[in-house]
Length: 320
Image (cartoon, rainbow, N blue to C red; front, top):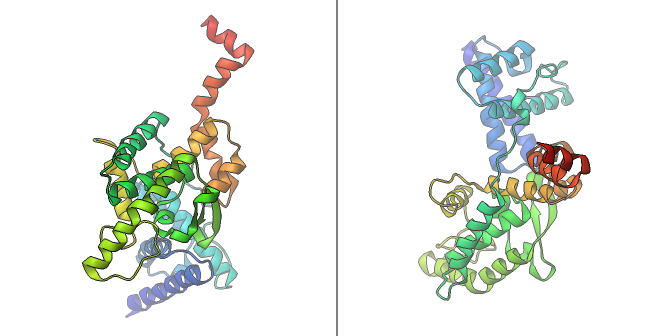
């Protein structure tokens, strides 16, 4: 009964925190579920010693992280779980349920700074050209037009996969070459679109999407969807479906993902001279520190430019 009481108390605290995230912070369901899973995993760790989340110590947090590392969990995932715990205990402090935050002096894993993976410009160009040929052919169907438009938008605007799925028809303003995107915490931002993305979206909206709407109505009588990108049944696309489509479009043996296209967008912009503030605005990062990782990603390109254009860099390269 004692264990049931502790587990019940922890479960109630987790539910209250998740409700706070959903209602007051405006996080999306998928984000709330991720927070809940991480906290439930930590609660199990604390309950081994008959403890409560509100009574957790720094040793509990450090032991939890060491246990994850010992089971082969990637440092990136451990860092994400620690971030979740920090947000949770800040909330408990704010709510005056605890007097001390047990995560304060816990160091993040070194791979907090793990560099995001991106594709080379040639790889992205090849993927877009391959799907573009199919989309521009005379017999192109709505699915080919849709897939190419999604890929162009992922790369042109650096959108997250959830943002792609949440886009509505009225969010896209092709006459102004921009899209209105709702990101994390329901924060809205304006994303500019290049010519290729505008043309792909225009063709999809005019030629491709109407057929998918009709197909959905005929198959199951669905009401008219306002989602921008539709399935063959006329439904809004799922995140998992977009992941699978990108992987398939990237070619045999490739492990490309929507997130890699987002990272590729930012990396290639920095390599071509974009300032970090502009990239931060485009990606919807709340903190410039998150965007600064792209200076490290583009370091190889920067060194090459330095060797080619700095007078002393050129002399050293010639001497070697």
